[in-house]
Image (cartoon, rainbow, N blue to C red; front, side, top):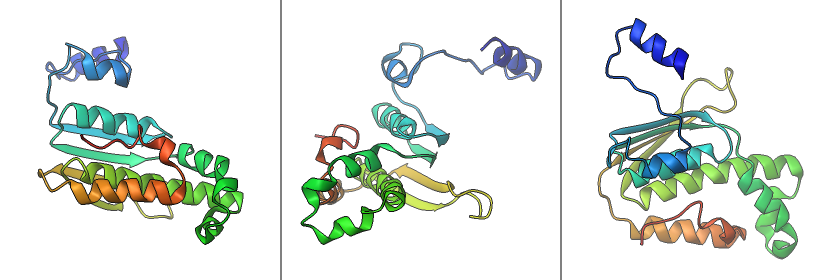
Length: 176
């Protein structure tokens, strides 16, 4: 932090400050305002993107811009619960380990988008850079528009139930 503070001072960024807080601590810290305009996360690995989204939702961010990186949590739950779902033909999508990892990554971002929509955000998904530069280049942009929440919340829950990953409801929470 000291080097960052020195760099900010040297460049004349007098309004810039740095806090050594976890995401959980930052949600309740008195050092941050109750509402934040923009929250970004670039290549936040595994659940760090979800932590950034949780922070943004708690702080009522107007804009959320995230570029997720590695996502292993959903794939792990899919793998763990595979035997419970074998009667469902959809399990063929993640039967092989490589497919489990890739499908888990894909479904993670689908759940994130549904979660944001279930909180009233308009969501757009695109590439950050071309695939030839990075395989992890999905850009999720959300703008709070106070949109209807019921249908995305239902779809989020339906997707989790269909895939047998309901235990992740706390991570992909919807407003009450």
